[in-house]
Image (cartoon, rainbow, N blue to C red; front, side, top):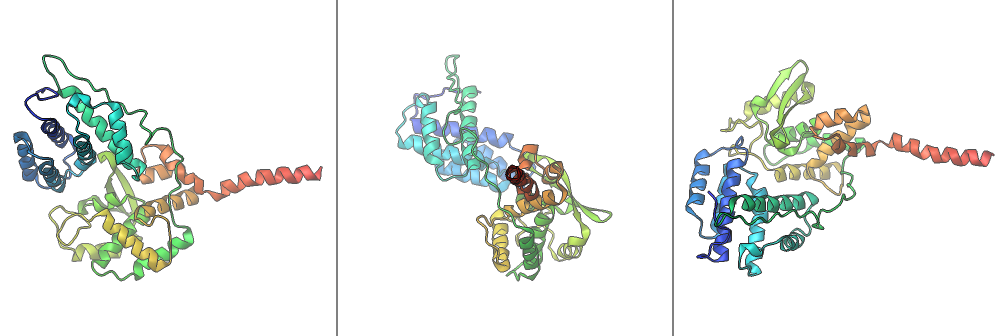
Length: 360
């Protein structure tokens, strides 16, 4: 059902909230429900959204319920739209039709300062998705108001910025780090924490992929464990891990761990999923013990370390792509920057030229 863009009987604030509620409801229906843990909670959220929400704080509460029920992706859309709502109310906008591309560009510029490029892109994506929804869903007297928002010239993400080299550990640092894994005395769940870190550093899987692993996703094949990984975009891939590296610890972990409702291989004391922030704190703790200092100490650095080691030892960029689950080979090419032997060859060219020049 389509609705008038501006409700003459209602204030702009009420009208905007109605559209945001409809948009959130549509997103909840379209997001993947593979991680949905509490269907009844989601049903109650959808029912309340259908009945109507009186204020943005109540909508915030419902979105949190949906996220906790398993639809984590809703925050990617709702958080930027919530910020936009606050800005439009603050600026005393009177009608939905007053919103234009310039206003949205100003919003993105002011609201995303200090955020990473990825977060800026997510904000832009959420805004584009919201106004695309409005374009398709509004109608009055047989006519629709089309925003046609593109945000192509928003300065926050225009042009290709120089790609930063990812932080990683050199091989001598990696040896110290691996020693720290086995020597580190965690306050609790020591075995589980060691295994999480080892799974990431030995396979290069993302932190989120490690935390999403279920016991049924791990099988055996000759001298390897076969890990069934669900990556970005719900795409599955297979990763192999040598049994000799974790077999005894993994067996003990499964024996002593309490079964949890969702079958997770790694879970918290309540049987729920661990957070990426928690894993990053573990990694930071071990880096300190190993005497390693990096600009970025998060757990994602372990993935970069694995990829760098893999490329240096095998010189096969396609292998790096397949091991890390990159959709594009260009994403994997960043690790070729760490091949000092190739760079040394480039340096040799100028040295040879200069030496030959003076011989003459």
